Image (cartoon, rainbow, N blue to C red; front, side):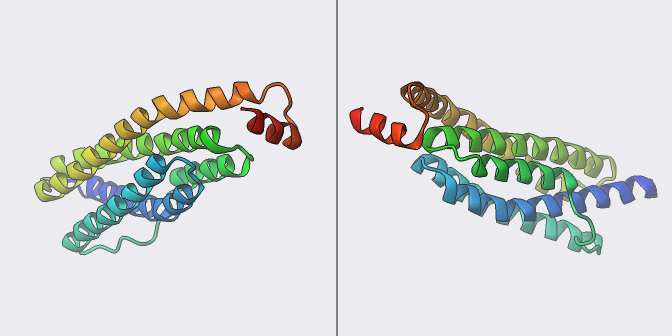
Length: 183
């Protein structure tokens, strides 16, 4: 017999994830537009489409529980999205901005990995094997996205470091333009 308090916690955590994923839908679109690397932009766009499917999986779970996914705001994701927005507002250019976006995106992925791991375990204990299977699919996708971002970071962080060393002589906007022309 499932513990009703654990089931209540399970539903509450699923609502938190539903809110998180919906906040992420908006953020990924902005991050894709801000990215200067075509590869990073494509990665964000692909993750946006994947996130839509993840939201549908959560909706399927809520439907089977006869519960509404609404009613909770994920403050964790709200903070992570805000931090990502701050990176975009810092005035960084090109690869440095992309490096910041990757860092923000990886923090989001790690948050999601932790959250999906937890709800997946709840689903298993509660005997919700179909839910666990759906949640494990999403968990695997989140881990895969994090790995892809880590791979992109290797190249982009190197470019960001090179851009930074080129601009150390004169950090004024006019100096940056002169240095870029000289390079």
